[in-house]
Image 1 (tube, rainbow, N blue to C red):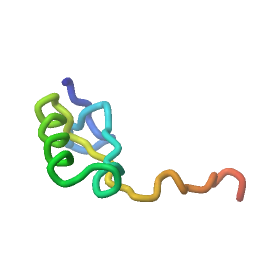
Image 2 (cartoon, rainbow, N blue to C red):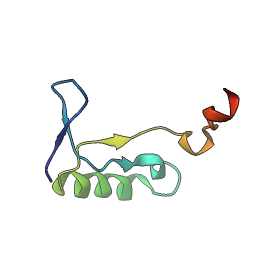
Image 3 (cartoon, rainbow, N blue to C red):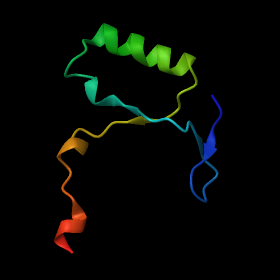
Image 4 (cartoon, rainbow, N blue to C red):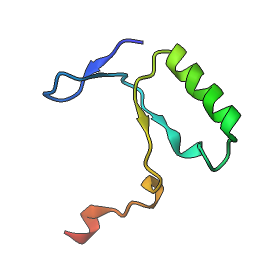
Length: 63
């Protein structure tokens, strides 16, 4: 997978970010590690580890 520069930093990340919210909730430890191994094999370098992104409020409503 090709990578992209992250903003004005020297970091290179995969353009597709995997949402890691499934770990610890819907997958057991063995399945979680198998999925991580597969992601690495496919070139993923970025995993969103946020637990609460689905609960984020719409900030534009409060301006």
